Image 1 (tube, one colour):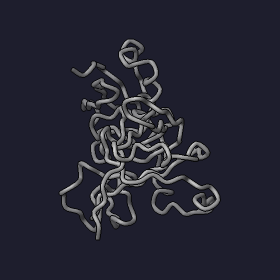
Image 2 (cartoon, one colour; image 1 turned 180 degrees about the horizontal axis):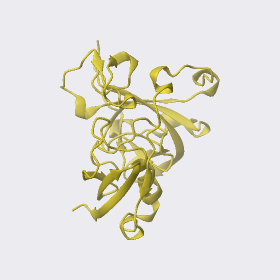
Image 3 (tube, rainbow, N blue to C red; image 1 turned 135 degrees about the horizontal axis):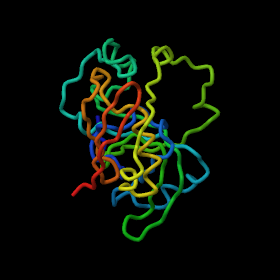
Length: 227
């Protein structure tokens, strides 16, 4: 079987995997850019892509490469306490470490230094993530309104109220603030860690955000620019 090579990589605001939404499309305000490798910077390869509102991205869980996979995993959606078959989940610890995300196509930009890039919304990818392929989302065959969601339909929502003081939120670039609040509202903590008062840290948009969670409210306690 022939080896596959990345055609592009993602530029995103996530400097670490902690805090990345567990699925694409959960935080619409997230903005990322797909940058193609030099050998694929041919504008003809993207001809017609502007006509689609959404794209499928096939990518690699790069931080899981080389780690052992397990036939069962503990989905965060079930609180991290119940095991399901790996092929019934979207766990990164898979035989081939491949991810699949549906993102919104926000724009196509032709640049001098990086060739033609794609600006997308709602992506759940770490900065620098290798991308193996891009395909258009086609509503007439990709949309299944009557589809069943398995265990995800019976699992509860994990949305938190976010207390982000204005003076701390102001440290973030203005265009990144809504996305930061959205990411935090989806409870970045591991499902098995529900310790009131514990301080967590997340890197987002070049800033270190520290927070605690108590009684369903996430309190941001500090925001500092990364060096």
